[in-house]
Length: 74
Image 1 (spheres, rainbow, N blue to C red):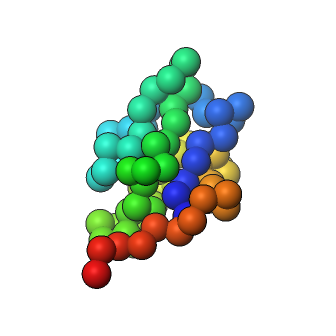
Image 2 (cartoon, rainbow, N blue to C red):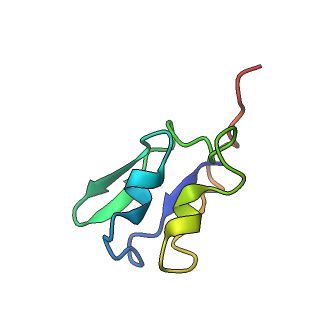
Image 3 (spheres, rainbow, N blue to C red):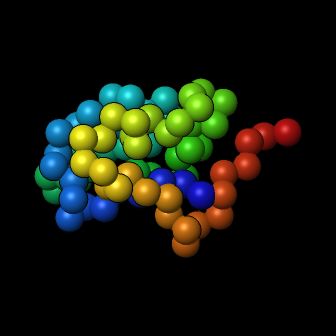
């Protein structure tokens, strides 16, 4: 499942944007959002999603359970 950013908790620090290996994070209206079509949960890049690892506010980058889990190409 791709990650999403809880906008009400996002401080707009931009730490996550530069760490995303898929360029899935962008600024919108003073906070950051994750494009679910580009989010691969950092599978194949890192052991832990980088948005989660660098976000200074706990539980701001969370799994979006409304969308299906990322499936890497076979």
